[in-house]
Structure formats: structure tokens, C-alpha cells
Image 1 (cartoon, each protein chain N blue to C red):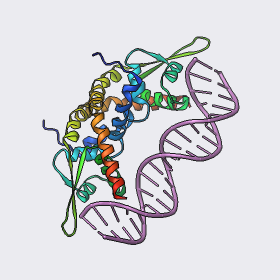
Image 2 (tube, chains in turn red, cyan, brown, green):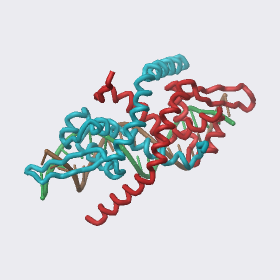
Image 3 (tube, each protein chain N blue to C red):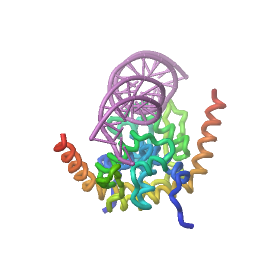
Length: 123
Length: 123
DNA sequence: CGGTATCCGAATAGATACTG
DNA sequence: CAGTATCTATTCGGATACCG
């Protein structure tokens, strides 16, 4: 069952990574992995995230079946977002990548500095 | 050592995911995980990838210390790209996410269809 | 062969104003 | 509170032309 890295098998992977790699999805998923959150609660917790982008991010996550949106018919209305089982199952692999990123971000940082310094010297 | 999902700890994760989640990086990394490749070899192997984008993708990967670029002073010149140890170590977590994506892409697909169908009914 | 430089249209994302 | 609608600034990506 050796998985060859064919072009085709990468397409869904790329789609997932594109979703999860966009500017805000991961942050939202990480927060939702703790407990359900309300809309403005998420907005307040993620600095720099505009209302528009939060809406779009949540819609996409909902569309992909990773997040549920529950409206409570209170006045004023409150809407709660939570991970689906599918969304929760994503936290494992994403967590692994996250740990890799945390562990290696110093290495990446210094690689960038070396690269930029070398590029500068060439000008 | 319980890792809290603070905002700050997510930033490097997001950067990695943004790099790896862009349109072509994963495809390039997957190919390079097999063996070193030359520039035009990569270009031919990835359908729809323009020369410009391949160059940019490779530069970014090189800058992050994930890929090496080796120029052989032949005529005509040949340039070989390969993964660094850091790049190879990324293949583990990315592979895990990839397997998740492959396993769950049917679920995501059907979630999308359900969502789109529901949205359509509302119009 | 393996790029760089430039132009231009398309897609994104932020700010702002308005609404049930 | 939780959005939608609209406008605009920026970014991104493809096409093309040129170079060592």
C-alpha cells in the first residue's frame, strides 16, 4: 500500500492545506478545539481579524463540514460555533504540524536571515 | 507541558501552513522527497505551473531553508533542487496531514455538496 | 537551460456603512 | 449580536519578452 506521491493524490491535500493555511482558519480551529465560541467572542480574541474575514472563514469551515453554526433565537441573537467530529479529527495532524513549526521556527528564522543577508550582499 | 493554544504560539504555525499551503509548495516538496530534481523537470511534471511561479516557489522554499539550489557550471547550465534535512523532516507531519486529507476528502466533498445544496434552496 | 523584468487582469482582503 | 453589501487598496498570478 506504499503511497506514491502522484500528482493526483496531492490535489485534495493541497485543498486542505489551502483551507487550513489561509490567514485565519487555524487560529479559529485552535480556539474552537477548546470549547464552542460565539461570533464576537472569536472576533475579540483574534487580533487583526475583521468581521468580514471571520464570517468568510467560518462559512468556509462550515461548508467543509469542520464547524457547526448554531443559532439560538434569543434577543439579541447569539450564534455559537463548534468543531464537528471531522473538525476535531483534523486537530491531530494539524497539531503535529504545529509542533513541527514551533520546534523549527528558530531554524527557519535563521535560514531566512542568512538568505536575506546573502541576497543583500549580491546587490 | 500542556500546550495552551495561545495566539502567539499559533503565528509560526500559520506561517508554515501559509508557505506549505500555497498553490505549489506541497507538490514541489513531494516530488523533491523522492530525489533531487532539475528546474525544467519540475516544471514539466507539475501541470499548470508557470515558470514564474516555480521560480518564486523554489525561492521561498530555499529562503526558509527547506530546499537547496545547486548550480552545475555546465553548458547549458543545469540547476538541481533538493530537500535539506529540515525539508525532509517536514515531510513527516505534512504526510500525516496528507493522509488525513486523502482519508477525509470524500467527507469534505459531501459536506460541500450538502452546504451548497442547502444554500441554493434558500435563494 | 534556467532564469529575470515587466505589464496587466483577476482574485483577496480591509474599511466602512447598513440591517434583522 | 451577528451578520450583509459595497467600495477600494493590495496582492497574486499568468503571459510575454528578454538574458547569461
